[in-house]
Length: 153
Length: 117
Image 1: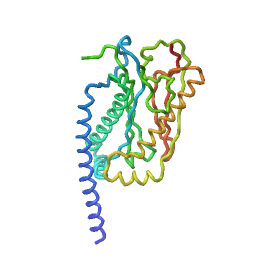
Image 2 (image 1 turned 180 degrees about the vertical axis):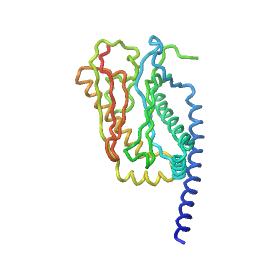
Image 3 (image 1 turned 120 degrees about the vertical axis):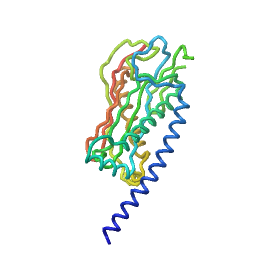
Image 4 (image 1 turned 90 degrees about the horizontal axis):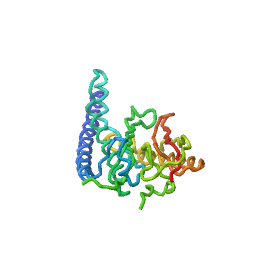
């Protein structure tokens, strides 16, 4: 009887985590896509060598986000660990976190009236050493926001 | 009008970039590497909130703020070191983060201190 109850609780927890986690993720993606469209006019490039003569001024900008995955995904990943291979559940998590970080960086750049962000770099780190079990990561995007003398049309 | 630094946490007289130059200005002297770092531990309160948030996934706002504050601190220390050397800009800035102990992280910012005209 006790085993049945435990199994039921486990399935219920996983079910709730799955439902809420999926809703949150979908909402986040809709939000990200909307803001990315908004920021199309402010491109971020990872190139360092840009035309120096065309630059008016520049300033460091960065954006970061700490994100964690839900219980269901962690369970899936632990199963996947047995066989190896792609963990699709984590891919989407890191993808949306990174895009969120870029957007935050661009928001800072827009506040400065920048035309683009050059030499953009990513850094990923786990918070604390138990982070892999707790499952949260920090994603950081940084670059130099520049204003151009001749603006692209 | 030049771009001013983001936020009031940095001295606006110091330019920070992560490219090899300060756009629109000429570098006249190099002062070598400067760095700033800080070690932060997580707060028990935000840890509990994060534990709950961990169930459904998503952003852990408490941690985001914690690391953001720490990074500003690291940048500020780097800038102070640069100013001590007589520099007025820091170029090629990089960030590094490492987990050094249970629940604590070191955040570091480093770059090259230079003087611009």
